[in-house]
Figure (cartoon, one colour):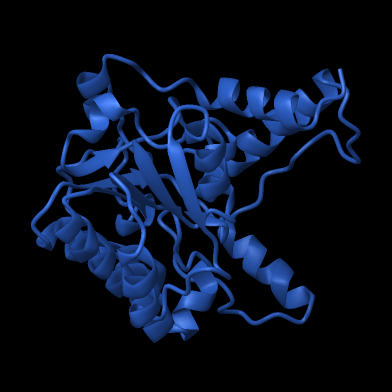
Length: 278
């Protein structure tokens, strides 16, 4: 099987490259090799490639910058995925396109399912939702995989979904990739950023990784804004974030018969593999 990974220079794309190179022929395109804001370049370079599966792990993920660069956000996050879907349709190839929990407004207080109505509250979320719609509007074998921007409960992370590859959440197995439509995929459980950070520090200490602090205090979004102002920032420096955006992976489990591991296990494994000297 031949696979193309777009966004190979990011954390998610790099993790996918490492994973799939063990079993398949994989070609990767990073930002320097493929400009997703250039439609002609996309068609020229992807059309020339031979592949059975294309994984789009690239996006304009700076949540705050999207607010002031709306056109760029929509071109990279919405228009480029449509072009990729058309190329895959013409090649009779499978497209796996990564999206985000930021397509939801965070008003729900239980895990979001694939059937829940999307209601983004930021330009980033709007552009990613438009990308989902554009991909699914093109006839073909297309899979949209939503992952959490935050650890497992929303929150502020300009890095986007890429971090999940490093903590153990990579593309769904091929037993699930025959499925077309939208699929949620995330580590099991839920937490706040404070809990996430504290667990990471605890794991670092357990695995002998040097750290400068041992505790993470709680801080609300409004306090982060005030803190930023104290350093010369602007009051409106942050785009709106969904307060709660946990994704249910129940459908993934039904399709594969496997459940994603817990976020605690994933973080511990990541720190052990990439940072521990023990």
